[in-house]
Length: 211
Image 1 (cartoon, one colour):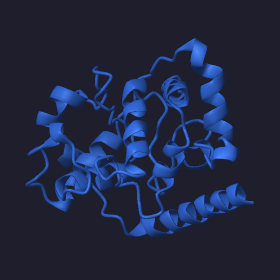
Image 2: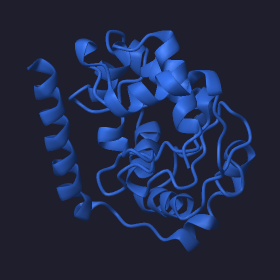
Image 3: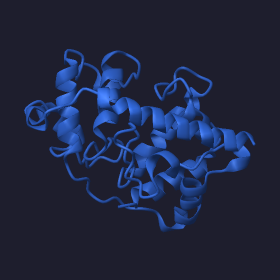
Image 4: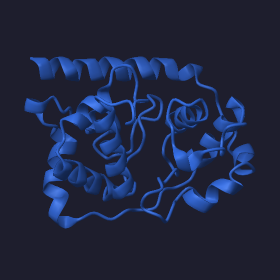
């Protein structure tokens, strides 16, 4: 029953996010292209970073990316490597950058064949006994995410980066030194808290292989 209530809560939050999407600031991709010169060093010219610890921003989701950049700028998501990068940017400039990156095609990732079975199980079915909801409920079975709802695309994302973020969410469940900007409902922190190191590695590897 508890797990079912968690699923119902996820559904309600998704519906609410989609309903609010109409009020999100719209960006201009062409204007954003002129602003991303310094971003290319870590994230690639087209948002497809080559370093596995830097996220691919291409096709990530305009609404999600805008929120993350605002959270970084405003101190809600401390990221040492982003220090000073967006501090002086306006909401509109960040929206333009988000629009540019979301319009780019994401390159394919790779997966560890030995982790596919476990990763698929966690991603598509969750782990009911540990209150771990299926990732696919918000991020879609294909990993393409839910742009209007603000849920990022995971397909093709670097496995190392996904695992790193899940570990930070897990830490943030009880410790503010972890990642805590996933919302007041603590959905991501609750899910990550229920995952073992191996399950985190497996689900991260699984989504990296989705296309």
